[in-house]
Amino acid sequence: MSSTGYPPTLAPSQSAISQWSRTHDYLELCKPRITFMALVAVTVGFALAGEGTWNTLLWLKSLAGIGLVAIGCSALNQWIERHTDVYMHRTRSRPLPSGRLSAHEVFAFGLLTAGIGIVELWLFVNPLTAGLALFTVVMYVLVYTPLKRKTAICTVMGAIPGALPPVLGWTAGGGGLDQAAFSLFALLFLWQFPHFLAIAWLHREDYRRANLRMLPANSDRPIFIGSIATIYALVLLPVSLLPADCALAGRFYLVTAILCGIGYIVFSIRFAWNETVSSARGLLWYSLLYLPVMFLALLGDHVHLLQ
Image (cartoon, rainbow, N blue to C red; front, side, top):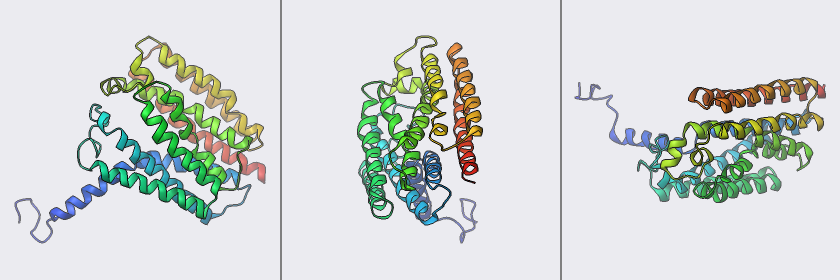
């Protein structure tokens, strides 16, 4: 028996451990949970554009290209923020600030994955989707990320690429930049604000340490952040009804959107009334429940209308 506790023939080699560690670091760089959520939104948009038909090969090509673009955005975002990530408890253990990956390899990885994704979409899906993917990279990497050090307006700028996944799915499935695409964009765009404000409030001290100009880090005024979240939740309620107005869904979706929207408002008001860790987490968890329920209602009602 070796000193590590493994039988000599079964002890893992140092190179194998090192290779697994690097693989894990690259996986962390890809932010798999966020990428997965984005691809779910892409799938919703793709299914809605299909009008009852489903092209599995085109869907897989779309997911491949958009997934690579999402991974590239994540890597390039972390490359730009490697110096500020050092100061934040929630990010200091990431591969770059911890020194497990070098800046040049992360930059190359991000540029390569985003570039391959855009080219793949252009060649195998359609130029419109490729163009929107390029716009997503520009807004997320070159606009939103640098603005985080300068102004709280970065939240609005970041919500634009954050709302594009269902639109990318819509155009990949054959849809155009019409009212239906806007309704999907507007739903996700407004949903992000109470969701993000809850996260930013919970991590406001981290943002202060990193000198990032996120809104909660710049204001200690009581009920201010919660009031902004409530305003966005109030605006989201009527906007969330737009897919029904575009004939993407019917009465079931309308009822679901109204009930879910009222819930979002209630949790936002609760947070505004008493800004605590409990109320912020409550709003965050409700926001994570809101979106899949809305997507399921939208898809289910859409299929029902087509029958």
